[in-house]
Length: 269
Image (cartoon, rainbow, N blue to C red; front, side):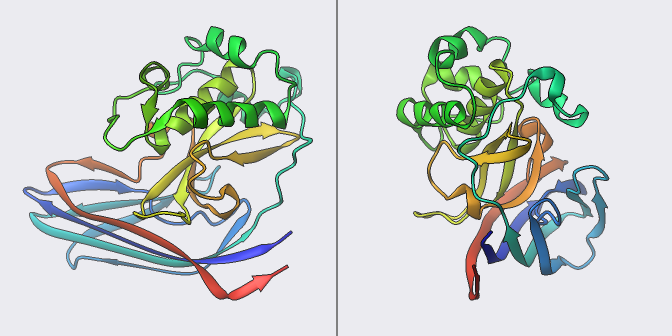
């Protein structure tokens, strides 16, 4: 298992026209197959903050309340990944053999209408051999048939919309992957985090993972970043669970700049 270390530098800036509350998901997840070695958080003086950790999945939700005026946030961290290689021989599991805490990842959700896209999933992938190769076939189909196009979707766009319109951004393509998997009785969930992109601009990235061979395995239908190098922030049933910023009030975004880079002094085989 190769260990990789990455440096995270995330800067967010807003202008508030009234007292506003935020829920931020920007902290790197400390657990699963990654370890936060160091981290720091700097907020505009006067902003009230509280960090809450999900007891099950270990997500860290930053709650912030700030008054009228500018709000700036900067989160920095050094994170080490100890992620096993993909298991290309991993099998799908019968429903009766799935762990209790995985079952809910089979259900249709607001953005992933696996019940409505079930017939399409069966037509496209029903004859593909089950297991890792079937999920990879889903990713290959999405990459070949769905255009990655900035501005082609919004916060209400669902997997069915993406399937019909044949365009979306990383979140949308990941939603479609999750939806096709669930329609085939493969548990799947959305993953958001910091990614090393082959082309700019830097941004938060969304991919998905499927439960195969007794563990979660990462897939990226955009092919924009190696899934093995994604630093997780959070996982969820769909985007409503893992938005990097949820705003309760009046705020205008001025900057979103999440940056990740390899820590070159660390390369352990």
